[in-house]
Image 1: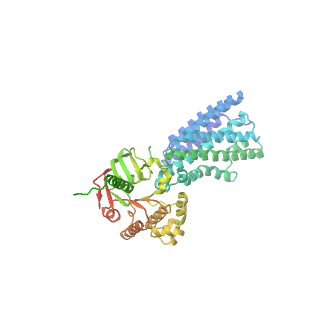
Image 2: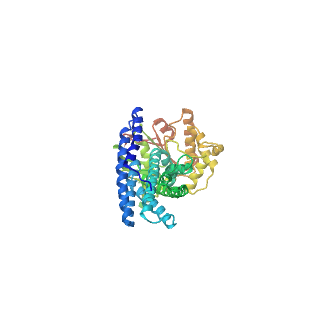
Image 3: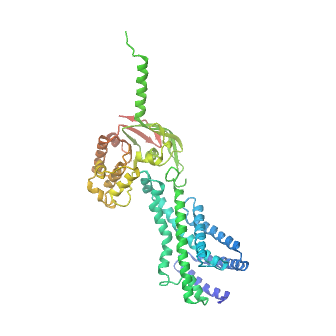
Length: 254
Length: 237
């Protein structure tokens, strides 16, 4: 098994310094954010690394569940902060992430793809929730922009006696597409333009390339499912918050 | 010696006159108030809109479009009540109301596709049969417009296509928000002529919002004046 020292991690900071230097040179004003990102990622990943180590040693399904629940909640709050124009986005996001995580993890366990042990559930669950969070945030962000900026078109359709669902349908479709297209594109180009992270990690750890590729494929397909589920649920539930029970488009701020 | 009609006949005449007057009243607006973005858009609006053609006139920002949108419940007032044909608006199914009281907005917003697909969509929502040529003709457009993509239409043509789409639902009332605001004089006159002809051809009442009092006189029997969200003295021609 490959071991990585703190010295090696510190050496990698040279590249962070390079990113900060480019920002300074071109006056992009991101040096502070780069610094914060480096510090936060170090602290957060170190903390979660020790937490995962404890969970692996405890070998408790309930601890795993608690960790995944915490990830879902944190992912919901993070995605909500990116979809500021969508009113009441908390519950659609929470439901979307929860169902996406439960459905995909449940399916991979039920199909015998992974064992229901912490060693599989924690990292795969983290990937599923993280990608579902990103997809939902992008989808809701797009939904918020579309519904806020297309009021005349939506009201013209409502004025014909269409339901809110019918009037919002084209915009929900575009939002859903936005949320899922990134992962679809990266799945299409996996192996051509880049090597996905799990495959790289396994290769670095000395795994057989065939096993690394197969595991990566399993994960990519799992992520496609989770991203589609979370973005679909989030947009389908969230668009309703733009309308009243009388099928009226809410005034912004109401 | 004066002759007086028997009491029963007098009461019947009064009753029939009340029924006839009530049947003429389309909308009753009582003490309407509405605030948006901290601004009082409508304030203590009391009015009756009768069958026929009514214009709502006032300067920009006087609340005309907002008042129009209240009439088919695209929005609701904060206070006050609106009745349509004697029943509160809230008693109607909003979707059915909007098909009967059709709003043609100021900004033409047609669905992607052809004019014909827009007409079909509107007719399907209303659950009715569509005669596209008839609807296009009523709006002053030829049958060839059914195949035209909406992206190719001029502003005036889009305005008429919106009107044709609303007519595809066979509404009883047409609410028109500044129907000629984006048009030159020639196009404006053509659309006004279309609306006048429409009143002759169909049993449909019009409520027209305009900033132009002269247009109001050409199109409407009655004019309501709005200023700063309040009704000024109504004018009857």
